[in-house]
Length: 138
Image (spheres, rainbow, N blue to C red):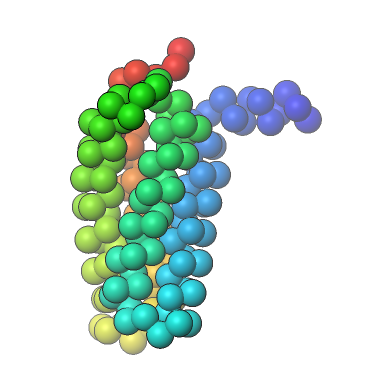
């Protein structure tokens, strides 16, 4: 069993799916809690995405792509690239939730859940090929 876990952990795709799931939970739970507290939908959506972006940078850098950044200065460039890429998917996510809620008349939580599949795939592609492209551990 330990060998299987180590083999699975060796794959950045498996690590990304696991930590992407954790990031999605941060996003969905914070959105849900803010909506329950009466925060307006679009504001709750943007705040929940920002919280998820900050969480995702840490886990993607450290665990998924195993970047070798050791100092705060080392993190500046990949963090800026990460935030830029996530900004693109944030626009897609906000527009997707709006579309499902306003045009399709779907529950906003259900619309947010559906958009997560597109966002998760795009975030992996951006992170793998644009953000964490150097300084990986061997």
